[in-house]
Length: 221
Image: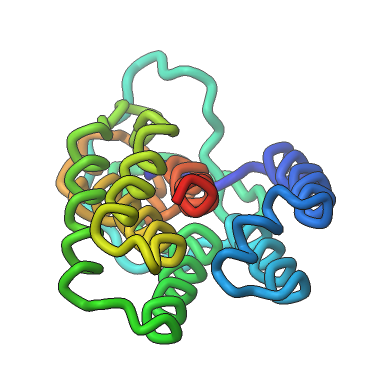
């Protein structure tokens, strides 16, 4: 978990969005999303919604937290579209639209439309969750950190072994949910130690992991 983007980061995100959409029509992301049964139009909507939604955090509740380090690395804390959030001894727990709500909703859609076996799916999610949990580490004053390429490989291999016929949707589901649960939800107790004003489930700290894990896992499966 980390705080959401500031204005400069949001502008960079918008630039990435334009490049990502171009890549989609060039075929890289299109190949991954086509394996999930999406048309180019639906894939574009999913991609745009995910990237733009990553700038939106919905507050859930607050918890008491430790003070940040005396000399933290420059990492401006912001809320939504750039309004500064100073640290006041409490951390706001929020959920990110693009990094949590949309991937979870899409995962539910994939599970139901592909009629994935529940036991294999739950086992796949549990395996990737365990990998992400043990790989992720809280960095005080910054957020959760995790190697970015191991989760998608783990998700792809798990999906291929458990359900090779539906490996693409299973890889996306266990990859994205595994990152959200393992790197974010199971580390909620560590948030108090981070010294951040806002911790967003699926936010900037794990958004890259959720987004790339889902796409790369599908490509590898």
